[in-house]
Length: 245
Ligand code: NDP
Image (tube, rainbow, N blue to C red):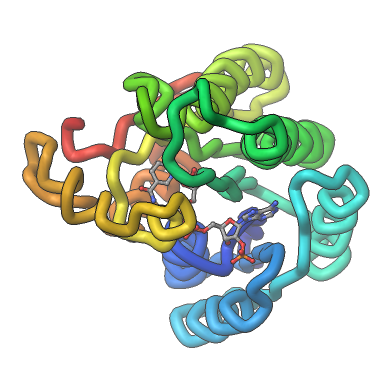
């Protein structure tokens, strides 16, 4: 019987690479999108092609909306019976700005998506996962570096994810549920274009000890390891996947 992974923001980027990797390992995949149904359908098709034993489906889910998150978990349970792992991946960045110039709508949207949204997903994971289950949160190296002059709101939102990871690991550990996080560095996805600076990948990507930007699949590999039984004694850990940045 294949295990089931639920991934928020699985339509593109790191979420897509993660979905395909789990499918390749034989898992069922429930993935969400918020606007790009076509990308989500493409990811499902990639999963189906990569999959050995599992199936994949995509649902619209806005992580800022409580009902939407609950419905996504319910539909995954209805389709696959149980959920064995959750990847709390959906996230956004707003265009580059100094804090002094940020308007409140922008900051609300970043915090609603990256903090409230991630906490709502983590809450459903806490309600749903059984002993042996795993939650992986997708933070950012920005939580360590602060992103001055660019995205201090985003960096702060990811700091909250690190704290969530530590607290929830302690809360759910006694139930046999593990909670970990990855902190990606500069990864070549569309998020940099949505932050108004697609050139970040070529400009900042090489500015790390490994001298290049990361690939979405390289983050997916760490997410998969943290979810897998190979990491059965790992909880409350936050792993940098940043080329040393
Ligand atoms: P992308 O922009 O490529 O993909 C973002 C994904 O999140 C899409 O699937 C998108 O859905 C979904 N999404 C956006 N807003 C919402 C919402 N309100 N509710 C539900 N889903 C939503 O980003 P990445 O793959 O690069 O980023 C994935 C995660 O990795 C994020 O948390 C990001 O902060 C983090 N990260 C990325 C880094 C990088 O360099 N790429 C570095 C550090 C961290 P749709 O396709 O429908 O729009």
